[in-house]
Picture 1: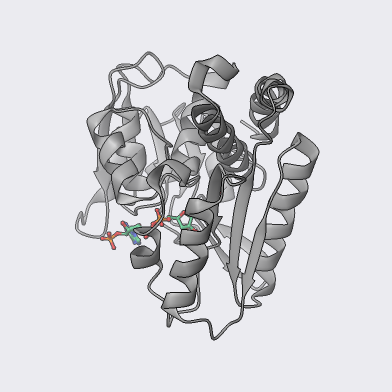
Picture 2 (picture 1 turned 30 degrees about the horizontal axis):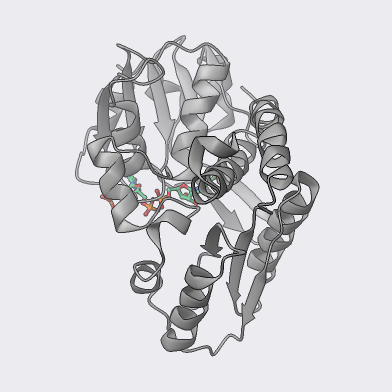
Length: 285
Ligand SMILES: NC(=O)c1ccc[n+]([C@@H]2O[C@H](COP(=O)([O-])OP(=O)(O)OC[C@H]3O[C@@H](n4cnc5c(N)ncnc54)[C@H](OP(=O)(O)O)[C@@H]3O)[C@@H](O)[C@H]2O)c1
């Protein structure tokens, strides 16, 4: 289940919507904030800006120095909150450890939160209210739907309860909608015999960040396996799902190019939806 075809389908849907916004005089804008000079983070920002330009979004950018204060980060966020040219924004994560990312995020206008990570948006997700959904979970739902994996009524087991993937994905896939509506189990370090759960999964999602932890013996033969957790060692990407799981799984994401492309696609979907809301909702569509 490569992510690129799913992402392409999302971008194909967004292109005419962006065109309509621009034709109506609303230039959609995705603001980006980078703190410090971490090469990987700077690379992610460049990639997002290049994609924004390709799609026809502006991308106002603020680069704060490594020793920026919490007050400077909050001021940058609040300036974007008030900037009519910014429909959606992101603060590249991780920020330097002296800064409190969560506290800064809480100062963001939730309607401009492209990552769907603001507490208000997590609350909307829990309550099933409309709003930006965290990008990796939204991308996993889109990936499963694209490949025709039946999720409704299936047993999904998620390894990890982190706030980027596991927790929001469990909320998303248990919602009463045709591409969700699953029985969801979440396992973590508090569940000693987690393989007992994963072996019974129709759909297994690895979101722990522990390289190679999901081995063939943890997978029910024929099950669908989504590898989302990764750890980087330098430039080397180490996925949670051991390569040998390919022999056992029915469907599986590739080690590289699975949920990465769908995450980016959902980020732009959130940005365009934010722009549509600000331009007058469905009037712009
Ligand atoms: N592919 C992408 O586009 C993408 C995007 C974002 C994040 N990620 C990756 O996704 C992973 C998860 O990120 P996150 O922020 O959601 O979570 P996180 O905060 O990194 O938490 C990891 C979760 O995995 C659980 N876990 C760790 N080791 C375990 C073990 N040995 N057995 C059982 N459970 C274990 C932890 O349990 P406890 O709660 O008990 O500690 C925790 O709930 C990370 O590897 C991150 O790099 C990938």
